[in-house]
Amino acid sequence: KAYDGRGVKQSRRLKVLINPHGGQGKAVSLFRKKVEPILLTAHCSLDVTYTTHSKHAFDIAKDLSLSDYDAVVVVSGDGLVHEILNGFAEHTHPLKALNIPLSPVPTGSGNGLSCNLLGIQDAFDVSAAALNAIKGRPMKTDLFSFTQSGTRRFSFLSQAIGLMADLDIGTEHLRWMGDTRFIVGFLRGVVRYTPCPVTLSIKPVESEKPKLIEKWQEARAAPISLSTDASEEETSGGLPPLKFDSKSQDNDGWIKFDKPLLYVYAGQGPYVGRDLMQFPLSLPDDGLIDVVAQELSSRGDMLKAMDGAEKGSPFWLPGQHYYKAQAYRITPHSKKGCLSIDGEAYPFEEYQVEVHPKLGTLLSM
Ligand code: ADP
Ligand code: MG
Image 1 (cartoon, protein in one colour):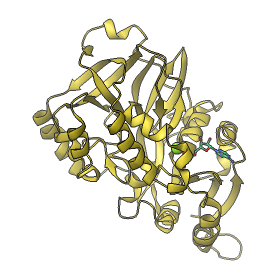
Image 2 (cartoon, rainbow, N blue to C red):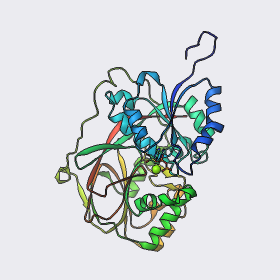
Image 3 (cartoon, rainbow, N blue to C red):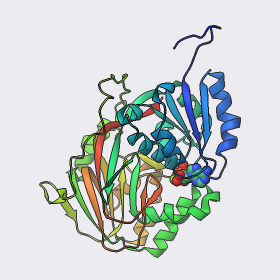
Image 4 (cartoon, rainbow, N blue to C red):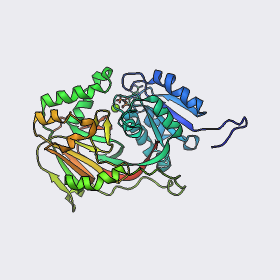
C-alpha cells in the first residue's frame, strides 16, 4: 500500500457500520474499547456510522461511494450483513458494490458469518475480527437470490422455515440472553413439535449421503481460493439474470419432497451459529446450495440432534435429508408460520431460491 507524506504506511480505508441494537446491545462499547484501537494502530482510516433504524444500513450500502473504501466492517450480527448485501444489489453499480469485501465483527445474537470466517474458537472474538479487517484477503462467496411475490432479494447465509425459523424469530424478546436464546427456542420448538405446512420442490444435484460425503468432504478439506482483483470489465454490468423462473419446478430434474416436515433449512456455512453446524458439506463457492429437510420423526430424535450439533452430527439422524441443489422452492399451505432469511423475518409466503456463484466478497485470513 502507498505511503503518505510523513512516511506512514496508508492502510485500508474502512466504512464501519455499527448496529447499537444488535445482540445484547454491546456493539458500541466493544467497538470503542476493543476494535477501534486495533484498526487505528494499523493506520486504517475509519468512516463510522451508527445505524439508527432498521434498513438504515441498506440505504447506506445502496448509495455508498464505492471508490472511497477498500472494505466494509459490519459491527453487528448477520442481519446487518443481509441489509448491506441487499443495498449493494440495488446500487447503480451492483457488481462493483458486491466486489467490496465485507468483514463482520461479531456483536449480534446470530453471528454465523463470523463463525465461518474466524473459526468457531474465535467466532465471538472481536479482536480476531479486527485483525481480519486489517489483514484479511478478499474471498468470493456464493450468494442466493430469493424471489417472493415477484420481488428478488439476496441471502448470504440461510433460509429457514418451521422449527428452525421459529426459534430465531420467536425469541426476539430474549435478546438479553445472547445466542442462548436459540437453544431456548429450539427446546420450545421440540416441546410444541408443530408440523411445518409446506411443499418443498427442489432441483438437486446429489441427495444420497454416502455420495455426498465422498464428493464433498474432500473438497472441503482443500484450501479455499482467495480471489484476485476483479477487472473493470468483470464488475461493470448488472446482476446475473435468474435461471429458474417461477414455473421451473415443472421442468426436468425437479423433485417434490412429499413427507410431513418439521423444518427446512437451506444455505451455506458450515456454521449458522456457534452451536450449530447446519451445513457440514457446504463450500463458500461451489455454486450450490445445501438444503436440509427434516421429517417429522420424533421429539427424541430432535433432542439427540443437540448432541454434537456444533460438529454437524444431526446430519446422521434418521429423518434428516440433505441435498446439494441448484435451486428450490417453498409453497406454504397455510398463512401461519415464520420465514427467516439470514435471521431476518420475511412473510410466510411462497418463495424460490437459486444460487449465484461467487457473487459476494468477504475478507478471510
Ligand atoms: P442480531 O443478530 O442481534 O439479530 P443483527 O445484525 O441481525 O443482530 O440486527 C438485527 C436487526 O437490527 C436488523 O434487522 C437491523 O435492521 C436492525 N437494526 C439496525 N439498527 C437498528 C437500530 N438502531 N434500532 C433497531 N434496530 C436496528
Ligand atoms: Mg439477526
